[in-house]
Image (cartoon, rainbow, N blue to C red; front, side):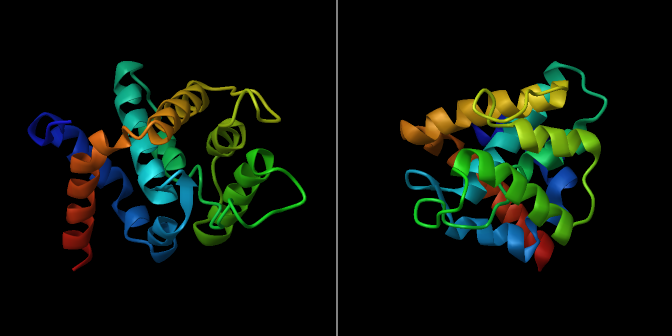
Length: 171
């Protein structure tokens, strides 16, 4: 991705998410492996960035709500490769993400809860029921496939610019 071409989206993404991206628990997502060598933070930023673009394509009137839920969809805060639970990670982590978000940031909207709960469709225990939920599900599958075939690095230039802006904002 070319930085100049992405600048308007980067600025909008920053404006929507700067409070979340400067949060220490959100920053801690960099320490959790997600897909292969990709960490949960990078994956989640990439997914939310794709969703931001999809919101424009579909003329969403709930862009902020959808993008913020997308950024936090994997806010489960554990190393899923080694830390096991009574349920498989596929079903457990959406519920854990919702719990963590609501404990740390406050109540999600019903749409945000549904988006996060069903983002693993068709493996989830629910079906996406809103355009936002379908966008998150599609973006998550797209980015996960890029993570696993080692082409997510195409997003590095955008991710690094967002992180630079966050560092500058936090100072």
